[in-house]
Image (cartoon, one colour):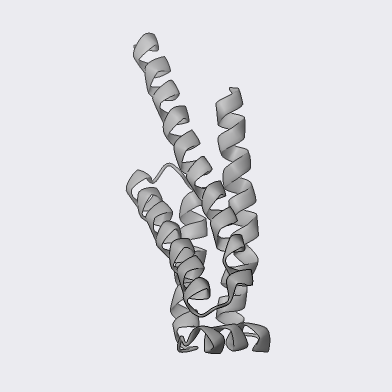
Length: 129
């Protein structure tokens, strides 16, 4: 297994495992999460939809064979994380800005590494054919 493939699997796994608790909390809506949403000026009912989308996105990232769905998952997480950072900053909650941006770095790393692994695999396939 190549170093790039190991790096891809590692970044994707770390991202997925780090995002899973947030998806569950969006669905279960503990008081802490409700307070954050109120601070951001967002309706609490949005959490249910975002939680479902996050869970589906995590499943899609864990199953990279489904290329188009996988691309949508990366895009959805990009919008989720940049939106979260922006909302926290706009609401004056500067302490809430770094975490989504750190997660965004992991997401982008996973995406870039996935492309490199895919290209390396397709080059290997061409050589064998």
